[in-house]
Length: 566
Figure 1 (cartoon, rainbow, N blue to C red):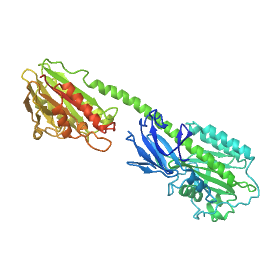
Figure 2: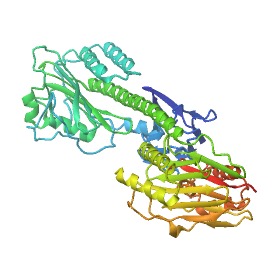
Figure 3: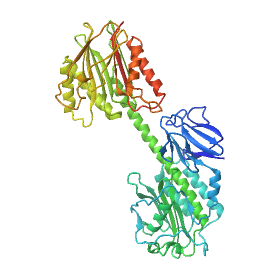
Figure 4: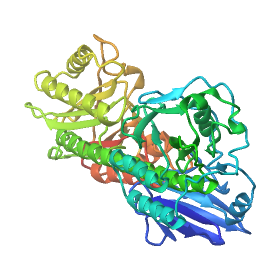
């Protein structure tokens, strides 16, 4: 029966697939329940029809991937396809195809046929001999043997089980890899040299991570033939030679002869997605012994376990780093929240409301609302280009600049010009802020504002009509042009009149089908909404979320509403 094989904490977990639908996710009602935080409650569905299986994303937050490609619709699954649900990785197993592949005759053991090409190697303490120009043919090692490097089969099996148990759940490969070589030397008692190379994630080169010599007086450098290494990497096959010096399979390669290899095995370490993670090699200089195909099978088994452990360790490291980043972001989030007003001003006859919903732990939207010494109300509203921590840092700088300016300069135009010049002098390259500075005179019921490249605020009159501030009077965003002569706009507020300000995260909110919420829907919601600022702001936010249906947003959503009581 077809199945999904997950590798979680270094252990394989098999889930058999049946006809019909199989739901995958974190929710308890899912047939395949996963615990990773990156997996959505109902993440994806597997469909079984007449022995064929396909997968479809169920509107998950982090997407569903097949062979490293994010899927948009239903995708047919094939044997050994790699699936990823958030951080959960699985392999699709089709037993019928597997049996057919096992029956395929071959003198070499194919690990995977996914990647093609040769990877660059770095020397380090491992010498990759460049002398050999000859290629290795498909014919592998001779079957006849004079001596024997193998030991009792039961002893081999016990050693392999010990290695597998030692690898399970291990996260420190630096300490583990030498132990693997020690165990292999116990299995293959005539092995003279062993080496494990792993791919450097930064450079993509193969670098030595563990080496072993049986003879203490031997040169500490482990020498590998590039002829052999290139074939292992290019074809993802295990190489075996019972007698490499005489074996015609190596075409008389001088590199093999010079290194004095008599019998050798070299196998790749491959991840679930077919990525070449490294190489495991052992050889012997014993003229009376030969490695066998059974020995190659054992080495392939150990290599497979080592590759799984390596990927598990890498995931653990990524998780640990993410936890640290999350902790740092929590601190940044607390700092950012502290910059936002804890409560809105309470003015007789007026109402003020604001909400902030960041797309990430921290964001670049900003708002503020506070009373000035002359009794007027100042409203500050903006959107920093760029999200995450960089956007939050600019937002913090902008907020500080506004606070220090507006408490001494109460004229809107004079204040926004001063703010712009200060931010331009800060030399924040590549960053700008769309921004609105607004002064509300609650005695004369006048609103005066200056707009620096932001979406014009919406005016909802008491009779339900919609007006917009003049976009042509808007200047460029903050941090774009210093000494720009911004202009002011003024409007009267009657009883029941409200003003609505939004960031582009509102009208650009997207649902799973890729449809934007849109300005038209914003205007319609504002027009038909309640006459109270708080209720109107909450209604608009709820309508945006209803449209998105849980789809992750790429931009912060900030809403501010204020006006006179009816």
